Structures are given as structure tokens and as C-alpha cells.
Image 1 (cartoon, rainbow, N blue to C red):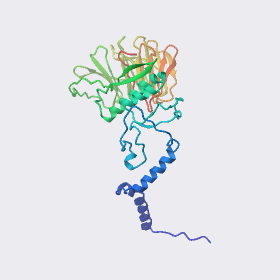
Image 2: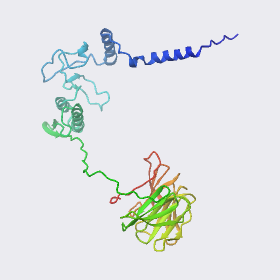
Image 3: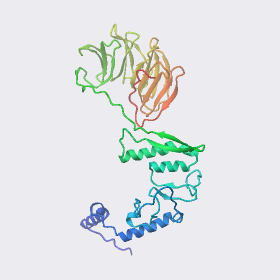
Image 4: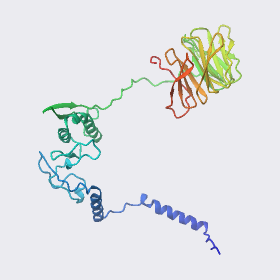
Length: 385
């Protein structure tokens, strides 16, 4: 017969949980427990013999410097661990074996392994290595010493110390000066804080697009209220309102080659407006979903639009023909830019990629995949391609 499971009250269970939590985290808040010196010494001695027993028997040599004092600068010596009193504090151990992870450079009785990087140690290490390896390691060694000095605060960050190194080459000694300068950031030029100049109101919905006329006399905005408004740039006054879209206007562009204004919206429509008559003269049909952005080629009479249907379409402005359908993105294409230099068309998509297109072949030239989330806007550099 199965045993009856003992049931505990909620109070008992909560108390046990509190006790477990207290026992688990008491060490984080209570006073630190005093360390037994004798036990700590025994532990460190066992650890030294277990991890460094293979090299403790090797002879220790000293050249060219006076004997150090009995109390070395080794951190273990202050705790009573065995240390070699005749060893220079700058070196720890020597022997006749190869470096464990090196390319097989043998240690001889005249060489020493450096423990702490310093100027004297750098010179001795350079003299011990063969000339070819010394030249290869010179820059790296000096750089590491400069880094240590800089992080330790022993020298000014803007003017790090100059390190000299003696290299043995072809039987002679050659002095090489290695200088490492700290990276400097250019100081930006100060200008007065920007102040709000004017607030222009008139749209009844979100303003989703804006474009400035090439003559810098007026600008145009497209909004979620389905209207396109043209404003005077100097005074900020409304000059004209254009209606024709039946959904949010997501993109507007003003042509610098003809008196045309182009617009696109979430109603899948791409319109060409004649600014002399203020009416639509062409429609570009083909997109299967909302059109999110458009751009005009600076030298060719073509219009490029991108859509939620994952495609980018190239249109002939005059004939309304669909020249290319650029397929390759796997999600909404949110932004498109055109330039005269190759690649001529660049698109950014919600599939986290940026694609550069060959306008002649209608194919992808390169794909940038560095972004982790949707690419919603692109800007071209004004001078560099």
C-alpha cells in the first residue's frame, strides 16, 4: 500500500523557501569570513607543486645585475612562499626547454624568461632572440610595454614614453626607436545650439514624406490624410494642396529635369503630377501592394519605386513602361536611392539587407547583411560614391 504523502501548510512551505533563499545568498550580504593563514599557505603550496612542479627543479641563473633583497616583489613572497633570494625580481624562471606554445625557440643558459615587461627586460629579451625574430617581435613588444605604461597611468596619455630597443644584427648593435602615439579624436567645431525656427501645420495625419524643389523655393509633403501639400520655403505658407490618392502618401520626389512631381502611396499607385496644370498626367501600374518609397535617377529619365510586395520596379517616365522588376528581397522594400555612379540603384528592406543593383542587367551586384533589424532609410554621401 502506497504511503500517504505528507502535506504541509502554506506557511511551512513559504518558511522553507525563505530559509533556502537566505542560506543561498547570505554570503553576498554578510561580513566576509576571515581566512586562516596557515590553511591558505598550505593550499597555495599544494597548488604550486601540482601546477608548477615540472619546472620548480630547473636552475635559476642571474646575469649582469646585483643580488636582490630577500624580500622580493613577488606577491607570493609576502605570504611566506618559497622564493629564490638570488633571483633578479625582473625574471622568474629559466631552463633549457623550448617554449611550450612557441615556434621552437630554445632556451639556453644565457637566456631568461621575462616575468614583468619593462624597458630593461625588453632589451634583454631582444638580445636573446635571433636577429630575424627580434625584428619581427620588436614592434609587438614595444607596443605591449607602451600599453601597460599608458593604462598604469605612469605617463601622459597624449605623450606616451619613447622606448628604445637594441637589436643585434650582423654582429653589431643597432638602436631602433619605437614610438606609439595614443589615438586622438578630432575636436568638433562649436556652433550655437539649434533653435526652433518655425512650426508648419496643416496636415490632418502623419507626414510620411518630404522633398525640396531643386530651385529651393518650395517643398512638398505627403501625409496620411491622403493629400500632398506644397509649401513656400521662405514663409512656410501653404501654396497648393493636391488630392488624388486614396490612402497614405508614402513618398514624393520632385524632378530636376522636368516640371514633374512624383508620388506613391499605400493605395499601390504611383502618380506623375504636371506642376504647370496641377493634375495627374501618368499612372504607373504594376505593384501588387503598398508602395513605400520612390526616387528619380539623376541622369536618366527613369523612376524607381519599392513596395511591400518585396520588389523594386524601374519605370520609363515618358512611356510608363516597366523597364525592370528587381526581385531578390524576401520582405518589404522600404527605401530606394539612385545615383549616377555604379551601383546605380540601392535598396533597403525589412529583411535586414541592403542590395546594390546593376541597372542595365537588372540583377543584384552586392548584398550587405550587417544589420540585425529592418532597414528603413538610406542616404547617399553628397560627394563620395
